[in-house]
Length: 299
Image (cartoon, helix red, strand yellow):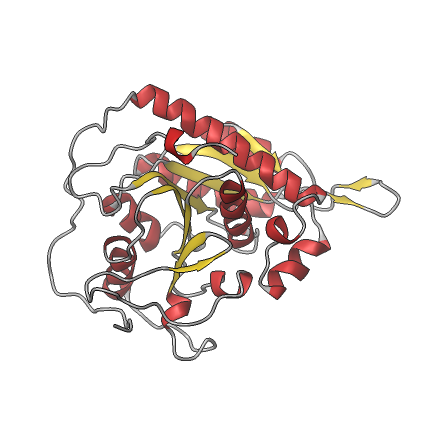
């Protein structure tokens, strides 16, 4: 395991940054639904934690939170001091999701933009994340409000873009890459999920074609961090609330995720070397001080 004390900041964080104790803020995004982005985010966070990192996982998909189910976590966050929300914990990860705050897990969240912005701001400003090496954010599909809000409110290290190989996925993922370029979010790398399937005879089948992940990486001018296979165990363990990286760390798919985590850490270590301790210009990311709806927590 690596010493958490050796992890250096890879992001420019000004005076208004809501998570000053976090070294790396990583967005896991796609632009396309159904590519396994939440599965990748959850297992990637666990793989980083298994490397000895202090890791938080924020479910930023307000309309379709998946983290409570995938990590088998229920219950409502509490506030010890009446000012900050304590994140829930599982497998050493600090966790926050709108799913923890809903009275009915099957109820729809029907919010317009301002309430969405308010919730995300509170998840960053009011949650007691503490000192972390990584804060991984699982973003919703698309290129709308959530990514734009985050780009304005917090200094991010960059984004990990998830795709599947086929063109119907990559066509949307290209748009996500373009949005990142427009709002100055660095692309740290691409993960090609559901890249291939290995049958019981050991034969590899590329069910969704091949080359999509590399094509997105080339377009983004970044690296392909890894290719993750289709494995039934991923679905089975995710439904049971124990992601495959935790449940079966020696399985081929868990090892593939661990390699993605290693590659991501190498990229961010190189970025930290480039920054060389310079936090860059101080940017006002407050976005105004209007009234905001408070999220329900127990004191």
